[in-house]
Length: 529
Image (cartoon, rainbow, N blue to C red; front, side, top):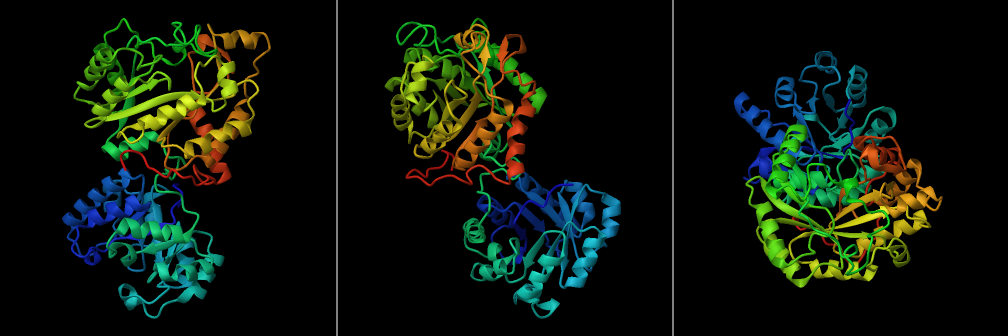
């Protein structure tokens, strides 16, 4: 059974949209934070109702929101809705429950306590209770039930209760005083000049609501869902190896690279510099199409330092990647001290027409740690690079690693405060792990590196996410490496199990990304907003 995990329930009424198309109003409300919509429109002909239901199903999926259909179980099943909403004049709750089992959530409109209790005993998952206040749309149901009856419903019903009827920003305080934290709205949203802004104000007044960008099940601002909202389809990143090296390996900055670095540990076998870029792209796209059903792609220049070359070489590689019709943009991984003005100007030019994400490897916001791991740059180099790249219509992503020798969890958490103070759009998180062929593996065997336990890593990353601003998308929560070169830690979890170890910890706590974030001078949003 799906959870009733929304606090604002929008009920449609196209007669109150001031002539605006209903899908336009619903889209604005969803962008403002609505996570559940009930299609009511009882006067529509069957074919028109079904067509509108399909439109709203597509819209709600785009925003990871739930769709409920008023009374029409057949339509709900036909469009793949999340639930149906019933009332005294519709099919009974127990009849629908027998027909659909637990496949559909069932909401019920009740105008009194006794009716509400009957509906719950029959299997209703939540109740809309009202009218709480006087409203023309509910005049046929008699006098308002008032906040005292609402409070009784909250206290005596074992399912979520939504206040319905005449609920507006000016009386929300009375609803909350009655112990109700959920509302069902019609005119307060559909008749508003700016439905999205109206929703935002109502959610803010109610308090405790997750920010709009936060996925209601994942509890984070997932990069994958950000891309889907932006481009309207499933997007995958395709890794390529363009044959770059690193200034921390060729002697210009240092030699030997970082103590943990073996690029084999995070690069697919199909990405090798001896394989032409176009062939790497074709193999990667075919894999993601088959495995995930991806429709469009972002080319990820990953191995080593992908701006460490002449601008002519960079332009050739980037343009070749962007030439494929199914490629929407590029993501370029690099060091903060290897971003020349010419490379930055090239990326800026590309970002005028295509999606560009600049991924900067910081790893730690502690200069002492950066020195110990032979990183070859400073925190100030990173801050300078971020500020140089800001305002150029590209997303900026930071890479961070947790678990360096001597690093305490509270020190790692300071990274969240730094991110909040900078125009950073995205983050990748990675546990420190030793792989064959690295100095870190040798340190582990000498007893100089003690890897984190899974429990410790998950707890600290959950703490970090609670402090990470909700505007920042999360691209990665962990790192993996081929089994044949893994040294430590060896947690024995598959990729999806690692991901949900963190997500389930947030669920267990009842928290989400940004719930403890400290407000900072920077309050920017991702480039697409």
